[in-house]
Image 1 (cartoon, rainbow, N blue to C red):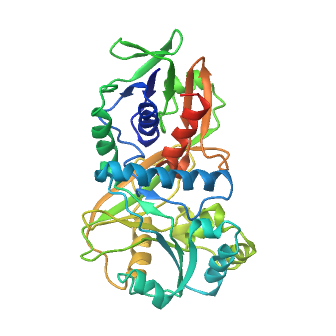
Image 2: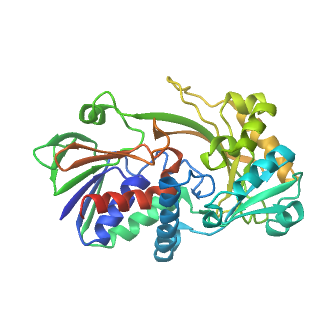
Image 3: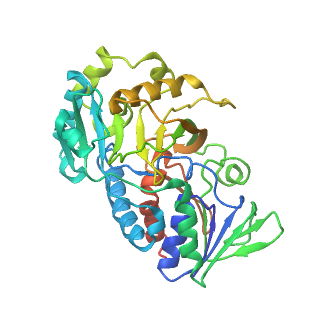
Length: 374
């Protein structure tokens, strides 16, 4: 079988990976020299902790297993089973964490509520002010800025893999074929369009105007090296408001009586923080849903994130080295892990994982391969 994959972000690359693993020939086409979208502009988190129970959690747990196996083969991914701590600062936030422990799938996530001293023993860099921390053992991380490059190096070692960068696919031709903007036609037995947040042009033409996927914009930043290990990923209790796993009467009580700070509320914010291989911290993020998106970044969310992080660390942040904005595609029905649609005979569109792309991509691609009988 010959598989054509359009898009070299993490979702497209994982489709190429699974096809190659199953013994097929793969041609992967990317309009940039390398992917430059959401697959690089994220935390690199394999984030199990907040996923909705059922299909979403099952997908995340399977992807976590796959990431670990791929990480053993491709050390440059920087896979590490670092877990995460969601820090709580008062009784209402703690009640939400306690409610999470009663979920029937709490053990599968590796949930445990730690007191402040236990948090500091697990992650000594957290010397600031907090009451407790919800530990999730199954969370992990990779290096987002280099993961695609390292995966590509591994794929290129196979004679059955071809990477064609700098080519934009303009047209589906015949059965299971695409034409790029060089005029070349690439045919196969299956075509997967993993175009990320690129939802116009050919995607709109193929899927129609009712594509149930929206674009979401975020802001993030990265610091200079912290100078000490941050042994886990870190979140604040605003993530309880964002992730479906934490829905409970305790969360209703929190949201009713304890609103977010104005900046966090205005920008749909939560704190997520991961230490990079160079010691710097990736920190975010915001969520903007209404078009047209701003073309510039807003400084107020960065100020808010800095205040929250410094409160947890008990020390000033290192100098900010980078700030950026990104855009990802999300299913309008956020309970769906991904939008998978046959748009022509043998041509499939796979998009809209939302903020779950980095977490779930290996399992999303595996399911595509299974459903298409690769």
